[in-house]
Image 1 (cartoon, rainbow, N blue to C red):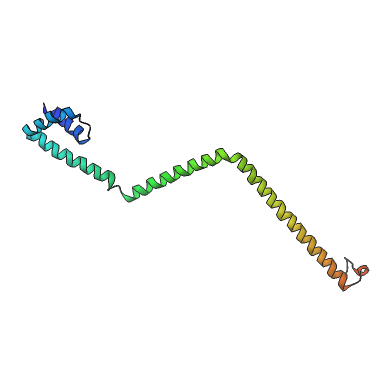
Image 2 (image 1 turned 90 degrees about the horizontal axis):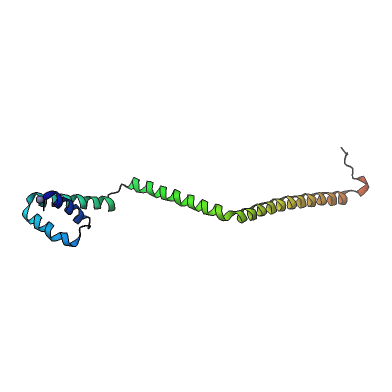
Length: 137
Ligand SMILES: [Zn+2]
């Protein structure tokens, strides 16, 4: 085995991608070749460092940015989903708003009428009906 093949196979081994039957020739070469042993050790360290970066050393701010991005995506998908089911919902909502506005308008009108009625009754009690005049004073 030449050293170039050995180094390629070392990388594959550390990625768990080296076929079982190639392990023995590789380790045999490592037993013979100090350069490849050193390469093995250095590459193993780099691989473990890379794993640590992946699992532990991601900067917090970066994590938060990803979280925000994820949230944004979720919001978009939620909005899309809402939009697709919202045609009847929108009609109901508009209907509910119209009913509410009508209710407020009607109850306001009723209140005005009640106040007017109360005013009229009060005036009737305090003076004879015939004396009520709108251009008095
Ligand atoms: Zn070698």
